[in-house]
Amino acid sequence: MTFSRLSDLQLDTLRELSNIGMGHAATALSQLLRRGISLHVPNLTVTDISEVPTLLGGAEMVVAGVTLDVLGEARGNILLIFPRESAERLLGALVGQTGLDPLETPLGASTLCEVGNILASAYLTALGQMLQMVLIPSVPRMALDMAGAVVDAVLIELSQSGDLALMLETEFHDNEGGPEPIRGHFFLLPDPETLHVILKTVGEDL
Amino acid sequence: MTEKQRIGIAEYRVASAPQVLVSYGLGSCVGIVLYDPDLKLGGLAHTLLPERRSGMGEARPGKFVSLAIRQMWQELLELGADPERIVAKICGGAHMFHPPPEDPSRTIGQRNIVTARQTLAELGIELQAEDVGGGLGRTVEFDLASGKVLLRFARGQERTREL
View 1 (tube, rainbow over the protein chains, first blue to last red):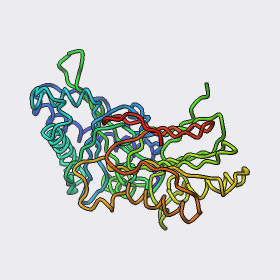
View 2 (view 1 turned 90 degrees about the vertical axis):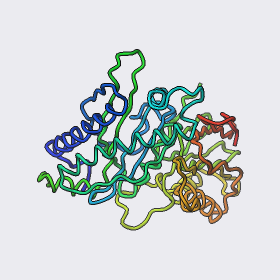
View 3 (view 1 turned 180 degrees about the horizontal axis):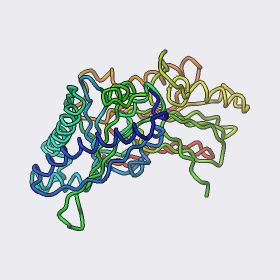
């Protein structure tokens, strides 16, 4: 499967699958935070791996990232990226203000991992139901650093099979209407073989 | 003021003074600098994986530690660099995510570092300095006029370090 050869119909199918999965994930986050969460229309990008950090807002921007492997009948990675300030506000809402930088504490780090776990599980459950596949998230891992450094480990997995990455990205933010919303980006990066499996299941394979 | 040339993931470039080459946000990637100080000629690679394995789709030399070093070396020699003068510096190869893996020697960052040292030794290139491993991302800036290699960090006590 070559990412660059996907048809418009296949791209739409992937976008729609992701949209539904993300809807479930947003509901989970909304319940967790007890506030509304808005989603943007998913972006589907086929891009050169060297451009991925730029798409995330710049390789040097400090972000909190949570990543999980997708295990089961389809494989890939899920990556959740929060700009540093958004991650701090998210943790502030969940664990309260402690006076310490919440991202630097073990409680904050494990809470953020758990948020990643909840979002990924909701997303994968919805996706798995549609595709009639069992999709399981691995244990989440967290990093706080420059965006380029956070994503390169995830890209390494992908780069084994090619120089292009397919990213299904959904931006979300909370609806409190304040000047400083909690924003994040949710990425699904399927393995090339997995993409083939997904498209075959929904009858859009070439 | 010279414009900095960005070397993205899986890319490498050979250049000469007064250019400045920079790779932003190296995590487990390894940045490799080769330099001939007399000609002020050198290269920077932003590599992702140790070596190309059979069955790996498209091959871009800048993606692989061993290939990138060999290609830059070759290009430098073609441009007239003296193999006896070329020196190397490497950085990166961190492990970014927590919890850390059970066997730290198996991380991709560590394998990249080991491959870089090995390839340099095979080519007889002196490894002049390194700043590798750990858990912090690095930005590396290579000034071909002075040969200086500067590292920047987004976290930790020390935010810049000369390699």
